[in-house]
Image (tube, rainbow, N blue to C red; front, side):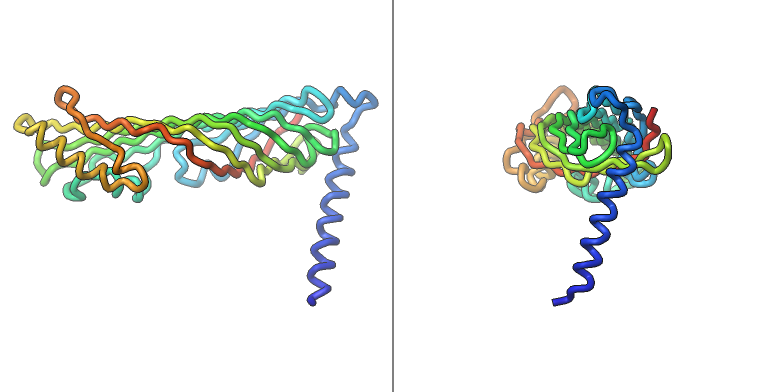
Length: 255
């Protein structure tokens, strides 16, 4: 048995816990129901550099010594559609892509329970509600002609779950908040729309082409049915309850 690595790990855990507890106790008033610093606003740095389609900002209100409400909002930021989605929804894979846009909006409302009674610092457990909206748009020129095919999609999801995390002090007014794990179940549903500006387009043949493409979508393809809607083809995805995982890291200003 390798004793030294185990002892080192236990020592680091004990030191981290005692440091966080000591830092949190500095900010407690004599009245346990009134946190000295009730409010915080923050930004998730990874959302600025990753192609997530959004920028995550966070706000928190400690309404008691061990409780707070936290709201995380993902502000849409246009980026390119991931290759996996492109390949999934594309009709033929031919032609030149002239537009490729992906955005994501999300909101997570948590009711946090801080185990050390030092909100908004320390370890916490939090039930939460979650909403997501994903928007996809892609336009492909057909054989370098003046005609093109456009795909647009929108998927919405709403769910409930629970999270575990920790928030610790980096300075007198700066904290880092980490949602270590968040698990939820979401009800997801969406609509896909295909259109073309080719005046000679055969709508019935176009529908068959779309049907062949969406049937290859993993898990739900067999349940999808393309229907003619004027000069467009629409596909409504069936509602489905799906498991979800979330992790978040934010840097916050506390006051």
